[in-house]
Amino acid sequence: MKFTVIGHLCLDVIHHPDGTETKSYGGIYFAVAALANIASKDDVIYPVFGAGEGEFEAVKQIFSRYSNVDTEGVFQIAGETNHVHLFYGDKGTRTECSKHIAPPIPFPRIEPYLSVHGILLNMISGSDITLDTLDQIRLSVRSKNTPIHLDVHSLTLGVNSDATRFRRAVSEWRRWCFMIHSVQMNEEEAAGLTIEKYDEESFAKQMLPLMVNALCITRGARGATVFQQEHKHLIRKDIPGIATGSTDPTGCGDVFGSAFFYQYCRTKNFDSAAEFANQVAAANSTFAGSGSIDELSRFKASNGNGK
Image (cartoon, rainbow, N blue to C red; front, side, top):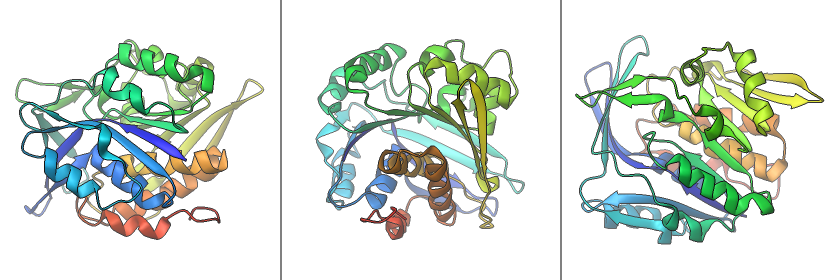
């Protein structure tokens, strides 16, 4: 199978509760690297993102170690790659500070990579693509019924003058989610996405009629919930969490999305996809930053069930 992965690259500086720091590539890097490790050697992954002048060659070199990643869609942008500082507190609190956010990825950069079996769109910065570009993507693949997985991620975050992020509702959330095969967000994003502040089941009832086949709400160590609609009835599936004792969840949502979408494309079953993704994301939570992400290769797909 062939997959296109769209979103912004980040350079993450993770500030741990004990005062230590971890620096590594993040953002769409987590999604692509996780997918490369999970996917079979016969699959092809096309990442589409821009890298700053100082990181462009290094990033392409890093991805070159994966035989199933084609980096022709990676392009150079003027200036620096987005720097993200993540401050974690003792009780799991997190403050995010984003600097040098890249401009939106233009549709002409994406268009050559739309003849694929699936498109993973992760709104890493919240401005990774414009709504008009998403409309162009949808129109381009609609006749092929190509599944699109949208991780809402930072779409619900604004940026203060000091580069810290804050939660805010998205007035056009219905247009963002319309005709998207599966939509992913965590609990905070689900609570903050709409002006109406729906509870989760009411939110799912608003979401699924938008031609969305599945809404997945992730809950960190407490697992995830998948909402689907069957004969106009809301079906809820709760996936139990996996305790790891980790205090660094950086990238786990990105890894969850890659594993979820890949397993869905293999099985056409959202529930089993969420169960698989939960295992992979739990494993990722035991790593500091993205430095050990290649350990996810133990989940590599085979002729079996992909676990």
